[in-house]
Length: 220
Image 1 (cartoon, rainbow, N blue to C red):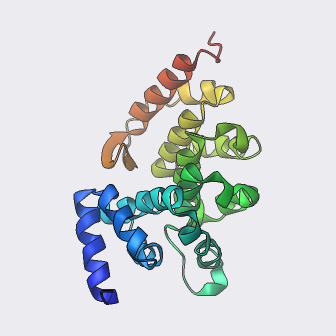
Image 2: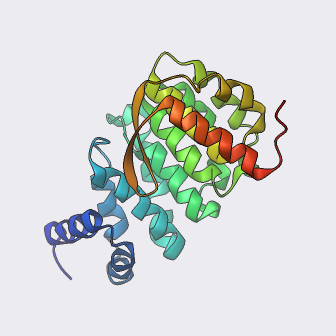
């Protein structure tokens, strides 16, 4: 078994290449992979931060037991008493749930509390969007809490709220989404396996197209 530094460098290379199949193969042979991925979650400006999040989700789908033991660690990182803002921990919970809902199903109600905290709001919105794309029916109490963030003074928060509600197919927010189709503030969001540089308006249009495509929303 390689030492911790070598394992970290192996993961760095795989994340940089976006080689998730090889990363999962490595995880099957080395149970330290999940814990080591957490070391990449502290800088959201780094593409590897987001790929590590996605890798954690894929790991949860392939090797749930390896990720299950990390849930308590993620929750601890979200506790202000831990001495760490835990940037990425909230997002990780959503991404893990996307791939293995049984690991986070019981703590979904906690997401509403994480949305009220400024330090965890942005990553939690992203995590909810990722989770909502596959399990929107489990977020019935959470989605209404997101709607007020569509009028946030922070363009990044508006963008993440738009994106998350679009992924969830939340028809009740259609009017609020329509109101943002002229918001040309630039933002950056990790989606479709890349960091996208877009505007709030672009995301609003994408969300509305998604709602319309579902055929379950009525537009006047």
